[in-house]
Image 1 (cartoon, rainbow, N blue to C red):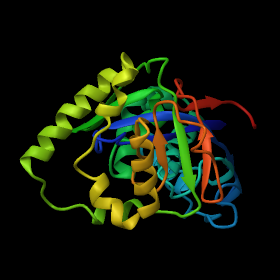
Image 2: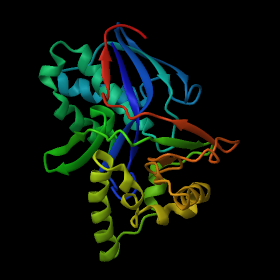
Image 3: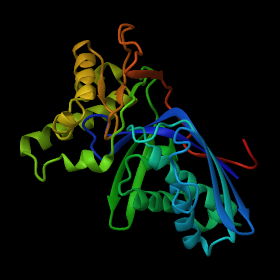
Image 4: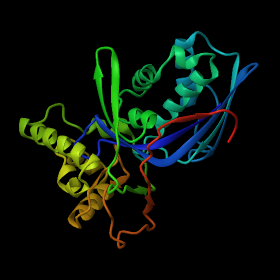
Length: 291
């Protein structure tokens, strides 16, 4: 079976750990049950760096899903064609987890009957640690995710035609764990209230009125706090916003995501790759056979 999973951007400014957007850049994972052993072949992003055995994140996710679906196969062979950059804030780990969960489900008879999309989301969020990236990866579009005592839940909403994502991807990498460590344990009540209002406005701006994207993407909870560790990212976000572009840090960074039209002078250079990416409306998709 083959699974195609989209890149994602989480937070989108004020929607910390809750809002996410699926983007039109994809990884493809082909998974096959074998007589024994584990073999992983990676091409594209992460080739030569990612594990080729049970330590690979897709395999980890598949193992977790197989456990819930009734048992492990004798062996696995994976072919991963990666187009989502690693450790850049575009959801590469969520893409691997969702691909693994859906690949395992597709390889088990009546897999969807045993694990529906809600259960797949719960497992993926548990493996990732939070649902803001796995939700848009699985469901597509613009998602609002939250966690209940029973696990993660999410809804997907259509994106207004005027939303035009552009990703600025640097050569440098960043780790979510490091970015989270930069956040304070508590925040002022005024900052929390500000973000609640802007996140609510962002839902309206993304789905109905893109003209409000610039004020809707103001954040006071995490971007400024993380800026010292990503000075280039913070500088580009500030420059874009000064030019009237609704720019934010993509996830934990260091990628910058613009949600409105970007002037031509902000072109790709030696430090940044500029990708104009459509919104992915389908989310993860499963196909029979190879790419």
